[in-house]
Length: 252
Image 1: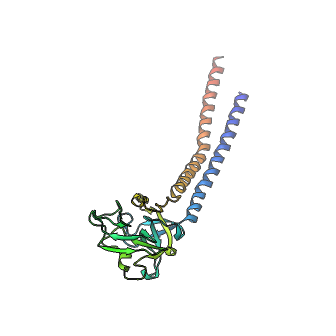
Image 2: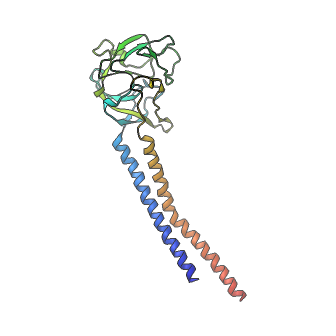
Image 3: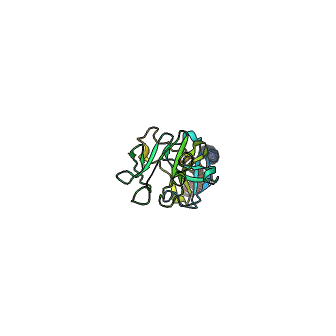
């Protein structure tokens, strides 16, 4: 019986060590995920419905802090430009320096350098926008809202220097996900721009960040719960063993 006790104690010490390790690793992952997110991402509240249905007015989005040089066509960006009111705005980049943007092609789609762009994120099935043509200067970006009928975007500024484009340096961040409401999820990169020179951008680390936070939470809860559960199991085994020993002693 003394040997069995030592075995139980050994298992208990090992289980306790593994439980503590799980909690420690969980804390690192959980807190690390939040710290990582705070360093990489900036939360913004979308002010208008100009990007509907991709993001709605009042949505809380996570935008990755980036340099304007990293922006690609199709990105949804947060930017600030004096000619646009010098306040944070959220729009989709449809053209970069050297592009000719026009609406509309034979299929009613937006064209970039003569190529029609598939834009499945648009709410309406009609023409992508009212007719216009603009050439984007080098170092500039041409912005449109996904809600093309009501969006106040580069088309409104066509008569201004740069034909409505904004400097790359005006970009603060790129939208990666909708944090609230929770049903929003991540924002996909549109494949319609992928064939153009420069391609599309790669998603940020938001999914890895969420995996770290969730995995950390699971390890913390599992590690913390192990001690009480293991104690109950050991207590149950001892009770059954003692019952058997009493039964054997009574028979003898």
